[in-house]
Structure formats: structure tokens, C-alpha cells
Amino acid sequence: MQAAVISVSQIWQWKGYDIHYVQAGSRQADRPPILLVHGFGASTDHWRKNLEELEKDFSVWAIDLLGFGRSAKPNLEYSGQLWQEQLSDFILDVIKEPVVIVGNSLGGYASLCVAAQCPSRTVGLILLNSAGPFTEIEVKQPTNPLVAALGKITRSILLRPWASRLLFEYIRNRSNIRKTLEKVYLDKAAVTEQLVEDIYRPSCDPGAPAVFAAVFKTPQGIKVDILLNQLTQPLLMLWGEGDPWMKVKERGAKFRQHYPSLTEYYLQAGHCPHDEVPEKVNTLIKDWVLNSFGNI
Image 1 (cartoon, rainbow, N blue to C red):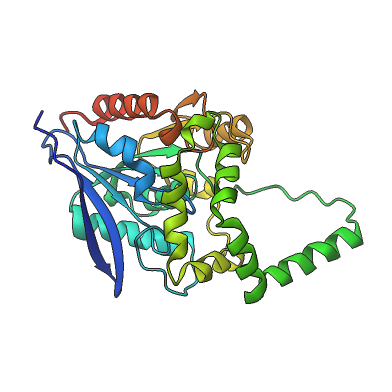
Image 2: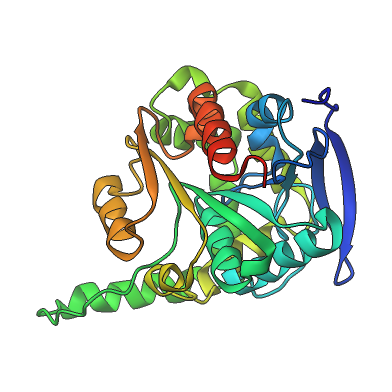
């Protein structure tokens, strides 16, 4: 094992936009590099506890998706397809060899898109409380006309710039960021001032409100079950079982249904297990990668 290298923050030009990324660790001839992809509203900073440990054994990269972190925030239509293209090009142009791609939440969905649709870019996939829709069997049930109308009105209001801006300003308030994090982390002590600041800081960038508003217009994208049916690489799933945003057990069962060869672990954590219980996540990632791809 080579000596670890201090993390280096860099900028990559992609389609005329600045993309921020961090690289740590040394290239290893007998093991693949690891690429870390954050979730909605997060950034490379959310992987700080993982970078400092994984760099001891791997070449590790973390990237800010377009619209987040220290990357550019243009007024675009954001989608899984856009981020898939960004990640795929980053692997090809910057890392220059297939990776084990690791994604949390929204970043998990984008990572799955890359692994399933650009198989030459990855050798393995690790998902942590991954987002993304499954194909649902439509069951027609009686609809309350008032509820349906209110839903349409709410969505139409949120599509208006003034309304999404007001909601954005409310959500990005530091105290509200903390309240949200304390709901999705089981260990409240893990919600530090640094974590709150890491999420608040990018929200001050000029393009941040437009990115937030674009969420309400984002196309749903390819269904997770379709992507899993295209996937050929080994898959490790790590679940924070205390996640209030997901029915983790039910969601895990759906993943197993469509990809029975996966490996999975359930951890005492919330939506972001890599930050809440980093020691456990780092060990699971390290052991799985070395056992699956050591001496490749």
C-alpha cells in the first residue's frame, strides 16, 4: 500500500461549466478507483469522513454535480440524464479508468444510471439510501376532486418563480437546515455546525435559487427497475434503516426483486449513513471492493 495523498480540490471544465471535484489517495494497480457522488443539496464536503479513510487504500474521487456544491449553477433542466452524462464524461476524461461508483440519495440514482447505461465506465456500484422511482402498477382508486384540485394548484404555484424563491429562502435558513438534518439523522450529535454550514454555503451562490426551482420541473427519468434490468456489475447496497424519507425495508425488497445477486447491509443510521456512521460504511466499502476487485 502506498502512502496516502492529501485531498486536492480542482476544477474541471465540462460543456463550458466549472465542475468542482476532489481527488485523494494514490493510484493502485491492483484495485479500481472509487468515485463518490453526493445527494440533493449536498456536495463533496459530505464525503469528508470517507475520503480521509478510503484514501489510505484507494485512489478516491468526489465530485460536485452540476447545480450543487462548488460547481456551476446554470439555469438548466436538471435530470438524471444530465448528471449521468456529467459523471460518465468525468470518468472518461479525468479519472481515465473504470471506477467503483458510490452514490447517496439523488447521487445514488445518477450513479445507477451511469453503471446501467455506460457499463464500460464502472466495474462496480455502491448505493446508499438511493433515490429514484420504480415502475408502479397503477391501481385506479376513487379520487377526491378537492384533493386532486388542491394538488394541481399547489404544483402550479410552486412552478412560479416568486413562490419557489420564497420556499427556497425558507428552507435554506440555517436553523431550518439543522431541523431537517436532525429529522433524517438518528444521531443528532452528527449534525454539527460544520455540516450545516457545508449545506448552507452553496445555497448563497447566485444560481442556487434557479436550481432549486428546477426541481419542480425535473422529468422523472428512467425507472429504477428498468436500470437494474440493464445492470451487469456487482452491486452493494447500504441502507440507513432509520431513514424517514424512505420505507427502507420495502425499497430494499424491490431492489432484491430486480437484482437478486446484490449484497446489502442495514445500518443504525438515517438517510446519510456515510456521514452518520462513517466507520462502518468505510469498512464495508473497503472490504467489499477489495474482495470483489482486488488484484484485478
